[in-house]
Length: 98
Image (cartoon, rainbow, N blue to C red):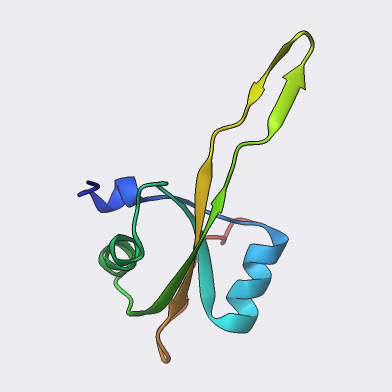
């Protein structure tokens, strides 16, 4: 069981798609721990960023097969969370330096 909020949320996803969703749907995107539940993700975001969360959607991604020279293997599996903020909440700013 994940108890620390910083173990639940690993990093923000700063991609073109992630920033587009942020602007149009008032939603932020994070990479989260694969074992994290929607409730744990919601509580972690509310605790870390001091905002109210409306809903959480998650997506599982399985590691892709990759080769480098003679060696081969798989990337790690990971989980993405789309966190929709409640109406009237200030948007989380994490991409100031882009």
